[in-house]
Length: 183
Image (cartoon, rainbow, N blue to C red; front, top):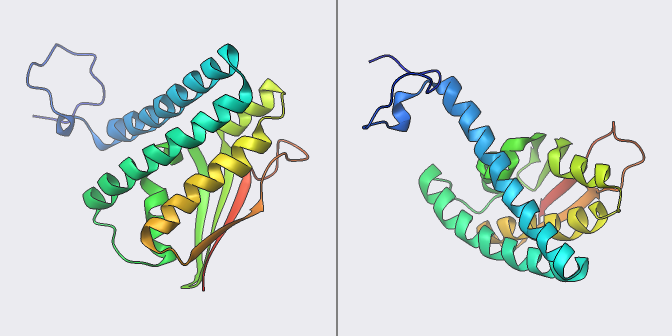
């Protein structure tokens, strides 16, 4: 049977993901990343609207702490990512769901220094469009906590520091940049 480029044909009771083409699966993976981020945004905004932003931020940090622990065990096992270096952290970042909806560059400058540069981020774009200034807290607090949790999983000696986080002067520049160092 040939690979399917969509599911516009007849219903298939024994459908499996391997029935789809790699191109379709890539698009589906990107959509899953968007859905993952959307549910995060919806519950955050619900707590913000019904209680307040301070509580929403606290719950967001709690939820991402739980989610990263859940992700780390499963993604590293599935992908076979092992080791205690910065390269392992960067490999993980390349496959986490929320990174599938960003444009980014990862660089290993040396075994002791790596960089993550995000050049397009749908979350930042939505926060900037909202215009309430929440990007400062989300990017510098939540993202920092998530990235540090990822690094700590592989090696507690890997430090993660922002090189640049929003707010940004214009919406054309980089979204954020993070440095990973190993002492």
